[in-house]
Length: 395
Image (tube, rainbow, N blue to C red; front, side):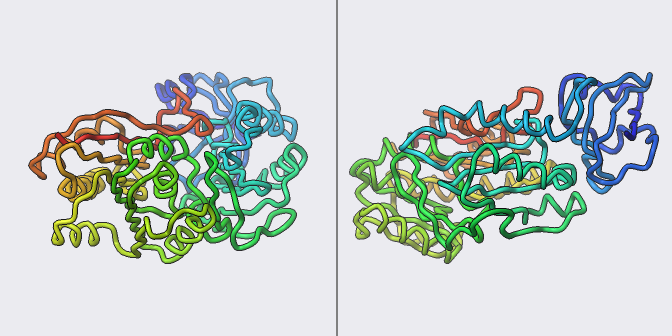
């Protein structure tokens, strides 16, 4: 096995179980590893530190997977890691009220670059590292053995693969191809989701708890759901008795799916207005119309994919939230989110303070949101805490 020696003083993060080793930390490579190979990582004194996936095309040159030297990275090792991930979610998998979950969450489950979501009887898989790509056949066999799904679909079409030097993939890996729309249940609400063409892996189950909580504030109120996608916040609001919900998304497929989901749950379609539009543009239109809402949800896509893009993202977040705040009267609520891992919660709070100042309003934080338990966060890997949000009151 190839050995990689780190520069003196560059082993601190590895000893603290952080799973990333950047290319600049490498002193010497003994051997000629291929991208995706498992390598031994040593400190400057050549003491063993960890095993990891190597990739010379990625800024993260080594993704660490194991810190115990006696472990053998083979099929049994992968099966144990996958079983461990499934065991931590076993109490979720047996619920009748929800059948859409994240089963494996990359670094959080010691399998960097592997994401597996369960949607009813199907699995949606994203393989985002060259190391997991090399072990794909082993992993698919283990998933089949332990979960017996109807089918496993590959949604490895994320831009992260290009940074690893591997091409995008989208297609059936095993079993039956899911229909254009399959039905899943989340908190007793039904959703038609499109695994093959939907955003990310087909659905955003990371907002499960937050959608339910926000809906507690909407009875007999008007709500604006921005970046509504397939209607997660909209449907929860309608279920909890919202007076009217306006849903905005730029995607025609998202709007079509939202309408299907309203019908699927037998909600009154007269209580929803679905608008296909750019959110920032639509917020400005509402402002010109002097439109007001009781509660607004902002759940935008990732504005800051890297730390270098945080400043630009901060400006975008500030403008977006400023526009929303202007559409709320005193006592109105804003549920606002960021899924950018590079933007931490303290930075997000500062951005919102600036947005409120520019809007000439005062705000109070009444709830802080995070990701649900099937998206766990390793304390040794704070980058895994990507989803954050706040419920704000205009005062």
